[in-house]
Length: 318
Image (cartoon, rainbow, N blue to C red):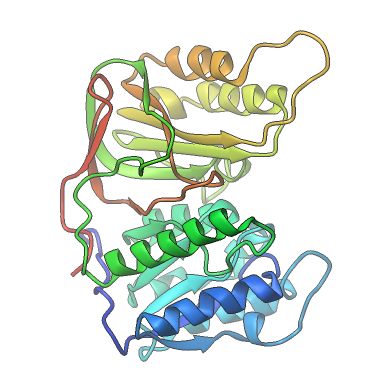
């Protein structure tokens, strides 16, 4: 079976907003839903978003979150599955998802952070192109300027998913970080990866990431320096960095600095990732930073680490 590309959205498309991990912020989710409607999309809420079903930090219990996820893909009237937020809980429900059914119902799937576990599973078990990018709940705790940026970038992503703006190159927006070369060279392959924690937590399971011949992207937030070093080392020991054709490091933000002397995050990444001797760059604006661009997971991309360019080599929507 070839790689399955979802149909592009259009005005009037029905999008299901589900909460397969944590509970979304009640103010932020309304901001995002209003934007979806402004773009002409018809919004339907999964029970995990519509109902107050919170269990600890989860939007609902495992069975209900899995039921919502399966429903959103099985319902042929739904054109896209959009995650309300990330947080925690995706790994808990992977065994409850019907991937045999899902692979027969390819559609736009969007989210990041804890949603990484779903991206890897859908990419590998269903051979689908999915989209690493903003969740629908906008962070209402941000200042006015950052809120404006988050709204604008969600709108840009929706325009891309509607085929109004073609995704041909992945580059940082104005005001974003400068991409920096870790190892020079060129690489190409299908894009894989996501959040460092989620990628490493699934190692040894049915959902272990396959990086062989692929361009691996990793990002992280609110972790200690030694945690980042340990998990990158785990990826070295399991040959995930060595198997990749190229490596893209996204933002590693809000790190928890250790007491006393310790290598900087930049030094850790340079030594652990650079040691794999694959073309690699640092600083793509994806994940938990100020900017969060759309990345087509499981689509073919070309990385030129010397020129610090990433190009999309194929159409990502049908």
